[in-house]
Amino acid sequence: MSPTLRYIAGRLGQAVLVLFLAYTVAALLLMILPGDGVLARYANPALGLSAEQIDSIRSSYGADAPWFVQYWQSLTGFLTGDMGYSVNSGAAVSTLIAAALPSTAVLALSGFVAAVVLAVAVAVLASYGRPRWLAAVFDSAPSLFISVPVFWLGIVIIQVLSFQLGLVSMVDPGPVEALVLPTLTLAIPLSAPLAQILVRAIAEVRAQPFVHVARAKGAGEAWMLVHTVARNAMLPALTIAGLLFGELVAGAVVTETVFGRAGIGALTAQAVANRDNPVLLAIVVIATAGFVLVNLAVDLLYPVVDPRLRHRGRVGAAARRQLKGAHA
Image 1 (cartoon, rainbow, N blue to C red):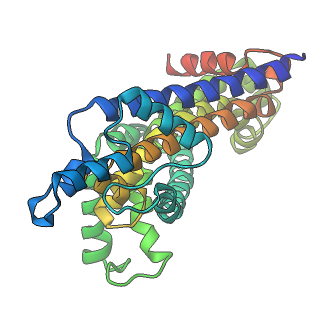
Image 2 (cartoon, rainbow, N blue to C red):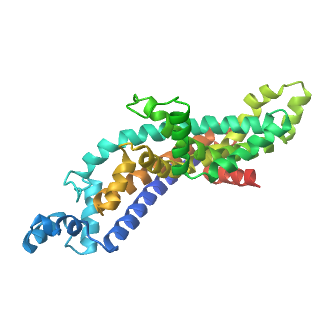
Image 3 (cartoon, one colour):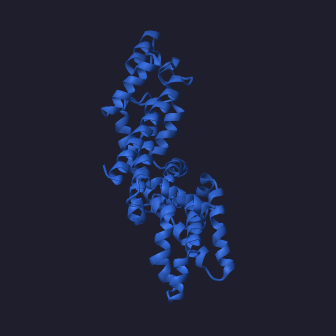
């Protein structure tokens, strides 16, 4: 088997293992933690249910079975596409996820694109900005971005852009307009680590001998940025972009709560409040699957970005060593 195929097979195997471990840890924690969502939902005296009726309901959800039986039934159900039923609403978990996922996916995608654009702009201005004090301001901007709490940032953006300046309406906005403020709230802190990596990577590449040779031959800074610096600085940026997906999902949950969007965030908050374990388990698995797939795609892009890695078996390790060098 060629090194490339061996690398792809290894990464696919790692992806499957990570998914299995994430599912197992989440399922076992939800099963052994105190609290029973079925009892919390149906043991309310106001419902007037007898003990036998409650036991029957618990049996229908499998809540009375030993933990290892619950784990096996849940695992086989997930493998066949059956995520179970919500304790709170009684609806199929797959139906609830299918209804909530598109809104969160659109917000996550728009937030990620905005974060990349903002990070690139900050990195370029921090590296090439004139005068130098302006470049220093942009160089310190990522530290400010990453320290701002998402919920506080969302409130400030609403106050400034909507209530003070009136640029975006909060009352009955259109589909695109309703996406502007949540996207900004999600993108600003997400862009910070990516901008930091880009600034360090650009500085490292600009110090390389081949850049000095190109400059001595008369190449302008703009030409070198597009044709030389950007391509060589992209590999560590790709690595951190994949790792940021976990923060993207968590940020989307908080942002949806702040802006009252109906998505995975609202579904998660509702499931936590009602101890709806089937819904929580499905959300954990879907978030993990998205994280694994994005990082797998990023790893497979390494040889495309850097031809030197096309014939190496440990492409991801080489890229991460370059990322570590950018941090130094």
